Amino acid sequence: GLATLVSDLAQQVTTLLQTESRLLRAEMSEKISKAGAGAAEVLAGAICLLAALMVLLQALVIALASAGLGAGWSSLL
Image 1 (cartoon, one colour):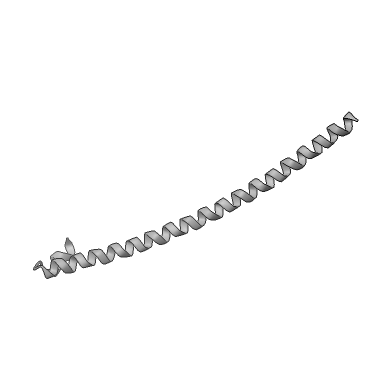
Image 2: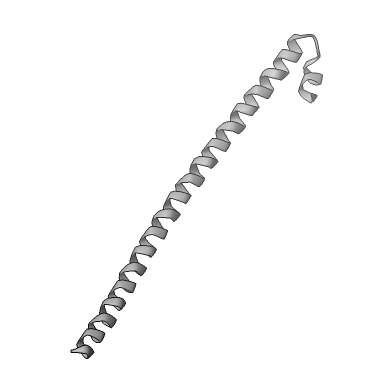
């Protein structure tokens, strides 16, 4: 009867909430993993950018020294 329907409804709602909770935890875990991977990629990019900047600055020092400015002054600029 009606009591059985209400009991089944309560059980199904409980099961649904538990399932949704597990799904939410799984999705959040996946998003956190992706964010961590993204952060690692950004860090790797920053390291490469820093290395490229150092090479560019060294090339500028060499160019200034070759243009007649002393090596010491070129390094200071």
